[in-house]
Length: 325
Image 1 (cartoon, helix red, strand yellow):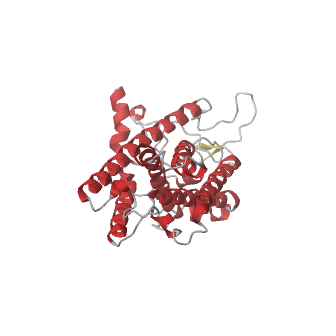
Image 2 (cartoon, one colour; image 1 turned 135 degrees about the vertical axis):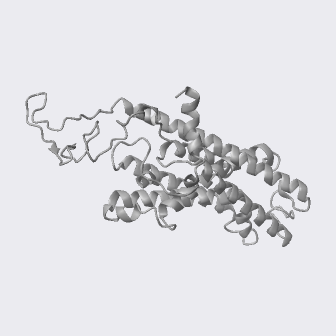
Image 3 (cartoon, helix red, strand yellow; image 1 turned 120 degrees about the vertical axis):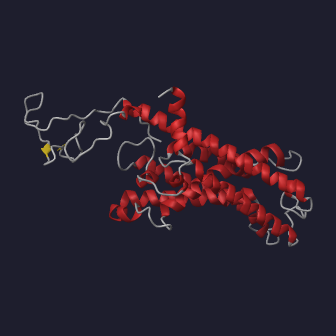
């Protein structure tokens, strides 16, 4: 393959119909880090709970100023910023629970790894993570470029936590988790944006006001000026698509770096059908199978070539031209 084909081939695969779904061949990716080499990682478990507790703290901090004001308490829930940090909190909390169950209750592993049911916690977590990732970055960009007013807004801890560190933490998380991004899942953050736009329209048409007493939630989405509001919503949706495409590129870079780091420790297996003696003269503990395939005591296949009844994809002709998506 040419260099251009090497780059474009995995991207073309993303537009297959099955890529629009939520099936995944290795569902344990949702409870692992891209960088861990063992089945379970205490460090990753600690990281997942750190993220969950961090966003719980951000939510508590953001709600604290309005806790004693009953008149404006419910206005807290009309802002996209607060939708975003709540989604980040719920996503990371669910992720922490899944990793904890995987780590301490292996008897539930088979149930957890069932990706067939639409109610699978992995599918829910996967979808929430993609929306929270894009939404947090969109919130940061829109707020600091359009909504922030130094004369009216205070640059306090709540402001920084909900409009800056939210996106920083979620972006870092993209580099740590092992589960994938799929281009066709771009519809999830777009659908979320449409839902919020519909909510803001209904809220304003019902006479709702923001915490400053204005008859809209954000001045850039004032539905009394429908053309301007529609263009703003459209622009935010386009921005979400651009951000998702960039995040997909970072995801591919993460895979490339991970594979590059692992190449140094990869041991190429052997192919002999009967290894009575090892190079050091000791008796081999590998167990031959009827098919001629040998397994180590850990049951890891030691196959490099093709045997009768067994086709090794890595050894097939032209396999060097195949690239994983």
